[in-house]
Each structure stands twice: as structure tokens, then as C-alpha cells.
Length: 195
Length: 195
DNA sequence: GTTCTATTTGAACGTGTGTTCATATAAGCT
DNA sequence: AGCTTATATGAACACACGTTCAAATAGAAC
Image (tube, rainbow over all chains, first blue to last red; front, side):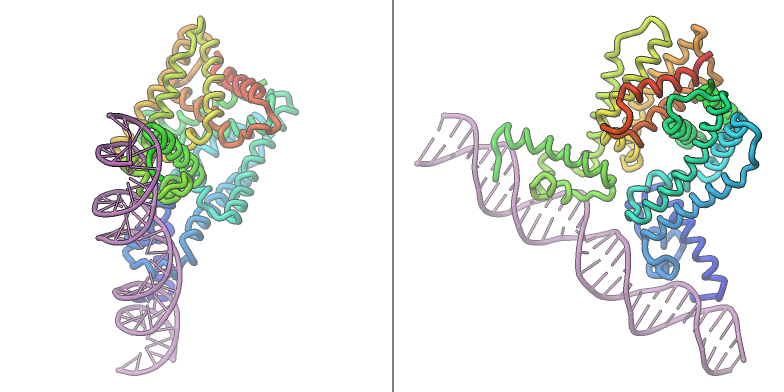
């Protein structure tokens, strides 16, 4: 049981991250030990330290990678002609992206308080970037006259909170398809911000 | 430092619960030790066990008391003539009740996974009771023809998720008064479920 | 087939965990 | 003033924690 250059190393690293992801999502960062993560990978605890400087970095990197993926995917969306289309696209994107990564999403807002202050600030900045994208759409829609909002910032947070609620109940194979879920939420969001 | 019948006992008990509330809300159940709680109260760790059988019960009782208070207060609301008024009343109640207990609210949905299965089932039942009250209003409104919902259950969860979002950003003394916040959210909820 | 080195082990470090319990203490009752 | 008893102490229990590191190991390179 030793190395295989660019083999064990390339395999163990991702497996550790995946195990940490599952366990943090299931039991919470503080309740999961390095030994549990190691056991899930099939390795001794000491071996983890070839891949992460410490437990905190394991959490931070999971969150940062998730947020950066989210931002990159959002920025890659095709631009739309009107705010209504942009909002529809955003709602569909948000629901689908998050549905595909329930564990990352769960960790990303349950474990914020377990980040060191510096790490927290970085993640929080990424989150604000994402919120700003939605807020931009809402403000543009107000200018177009298709949206009517008493407060754009609060509307932004309200829409995201509502959409994130999907995560708490949706289970693949349940009574509703993803398409249906998307339609239902789009209907509510559209009406909530409508002029 | 010993007892005062119906004095130390009546004082230490609540102080322990209050300390646990603050610390669990701030750092999370798993990250808080019995010794930290004891230190906050100004007592040794062993003394806590005169007031709680174990750490788990401390968490469970905080959550159960909170949920029962919430349910009792909700059931005590005056009945309304129409679903629209009932929904407006519910939105106002929900926002104000939760704003007054940010720590209890935070714990009640961040620490669910740290409950034993039996305790979790009980809390979850209480939560469902509360959701059912809102769902009843929405269904009644559909019958009256004032609400139009593709799916009443999802609308219920969406409204609650949206309202709970307030907790993540509202700070007393911020740029918006509670009345303003209530108006803004009521505006969005009303439109989201409107026929 | 030998050497080299990336990778893993396994034990150890110091500290902290939830919980228990014999002992000490001080207030209430008579 | 003395007795009783509710309350709190403080040490101890067995175990778990994150992290470190010398030593062992096994694939890659020659």
C-alpha cells in the first residue's frame, strides 16, 4: 500500500474530497472527524494530510469550488433580450444547477459559521456576486416597467430564499418532475415581481 | 455556593437554557461543549446535570418549546373573514414572531440533524402542523377564487422559505423598519399567490 | 534487479469530550 | 443552634479529537 505516481495521488485526493462532501453534508462539519473521512476512503487519518493542510481547508475548498462553479456557470448563460426572459432563465438555471449538487448547496450555507473569518469573507464575496447578478436582472426589469418592486435588494434575497426552499423537499423520483418544479416556481416568482 | 430552595434552582435552570441557546445559535450544537455552557453560567460542568439529563435533551427542549410556542401563538390568532385577510395576518405574524426569536429560529432549522431520530420525528411533526395552517389558508383562498396555485403544498413551502429569508439579513436598527419589511414581503407574497 | 521516492502506515502528542459521583457547602425548617 | 437536604464542586472515567512524524512500502525509472 504505497504510491503509484499520478495514480494513487490522483485518485486519493478526489476520494477524500468526495468523502468529506458526503459526511459534512450528512452530519455537519463539526460532527465529522478526520478519522471518519479517512475510514470512508479506506486509509489512515495521517494520509489525509498529504492532500489537505488541515480540516478547515477541506471545508473551505469544497465551498469555494462550489461557489466558483456556480458563478462561472451563471456568467456563461446566454444574454437575453428582455428582463423577463433573463429572469426566467435565471430561475431555471438556479433550480437545475442546485438540484444537481444538493450536498454542495447544503454545505455552502449550513457551514458558513465554521469557516475562519478570512475564509468566510471570501465565500461571502462570491455569494454576493451571485446575488448581484439576479439583482441586476430585477433592476433592469424595473427600468423596463415589467417588474414592480418596493425594494430590489430584498426582492433579490426573497427570490433566492424561495428558490433555495426547493432543496429542502425535492427528491428525484418524487411526485413532481424537474420540469414541473421549474414551471411552478417560475409562475410564483414571475407573479411576485410583476408590475 | 450551594442551594436556595426555589431560588438557585429556579435561577440556574433558565440560565443554563439561555446560555445553551446563545452558544448553540452562535457556534452550532456540535461545536459547543458542556463546559462552555457551564462557564457561561458561571458554574462547573457537573452542575448542569441537575437540570438536564444530557446535552441532547438541552437541544431538544429548546426546539420543542420554541415550536410549541409558535404553534400556540399561531392558533391564538383571530379568525378572519376571507383568505386574503388570513394570509396577510399570517405573513405579519410569521415575520414578527420569528424576528423576536432569531436564535430559537436559527437553531430550529440548523440543528435538526443533531436530534436523535425520535426527537427529530417529534419536532418535524410540529413543523408540519405549522405548515398545514398556512396551507389551509392557501387552499381556502383557491376555493374562494382569490388565489391561483399550481400546487398548494409547494406554494406553502415557497412562502415559508421566502419569509424565513428575512432572518438571514434583517438586523434591528437597519435601514428598514419592521413595518416596512412586513409591507414589502406581504406585497410579494400576495402577488405570488394571486389569481 | 536495483535504486529512488511518492505515498501510506501506525503510533504518539497534548488536549478536549460527555458524563458520573463522592464530597463539601449553605440555605430552610424546627 | 442543629439538622436536613437541595445544590454545586472538582476530580476522575474512558474515549475521541486534530495533527505530526519516523518508519515501512511498493510502483516507476534506470
